[in-house]
Amino acid sequence: TYLNNFLYVSASEENPGQGILRTITKISPQNGAVDATISTLPQDLNQDITGLASNSTSLIGTQNQGAFAVFMNPTNGNFQKRVDFYDISHPDGFDSLAYHISSRGLFATKGGNVYRFADDGRRLGEFGTALDMLKGSVFVGDVLYLAEGQGNTIRVAAIPVPPSTVTTAPKGMATDGTYLYLAVDGTPKDKILVLSTNPGAIVNSYDAPGDNTDGLAWHDAKLYAVTNEFHPTRGQQPP
Image (cartoon, rainbow, N blue to C red; front, side):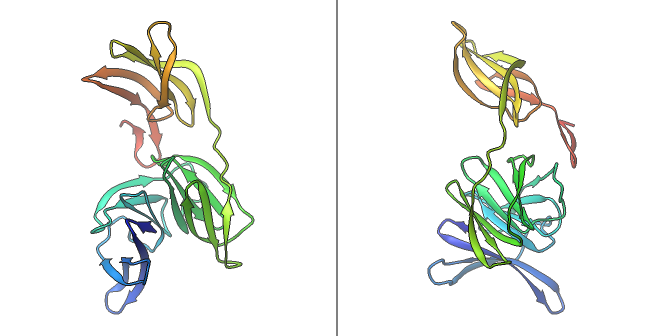
């Protein structure tokens, strides 16, 4: 993956007497010169790192076993956070990983399929291709490029937009004394509408933190939202 004018390359090599050595190497894209090697990786990444992406500030890795992504500091590989993927049909690892900047979404490949995840790990979509052995994926703007190992080609993919609906069913409301903040039911996430008190026109709207928002409150110049989600790894959120 490319980050801050450098390429980062993940590798796994047999190290005699020490087992498998997994590293991420930082190299110059101009001449391939090695700038740094990260050999101490987060404990969650204990298998081969088959997908490596970046979100302009962090490295993001996934492996050939497990259904999750790990965010890392690009300087030293220190653990930042783990995002568990759920509601997927193939939770046994992925072959590549790409990050879409504008939607903050993660796209992982397995075989000939592409899986789309929200930044909290929820599956937003899954689509198949006529290809097989998708081993590399990267976004250039909104265009997804896929490297496939069967015909040894690079293909351009059109990403289907996940269905989105917004209703007028209220789920919570708060005020800052000037505007009303109304949570309404929607998919893949609920929406928060910002309304003027007179005549009630919508002046702004944005996604709620999840798709099961149950309450809003205004405190200390900030808006708080309560969501009750179920995550297969962590259970009911909040617990």
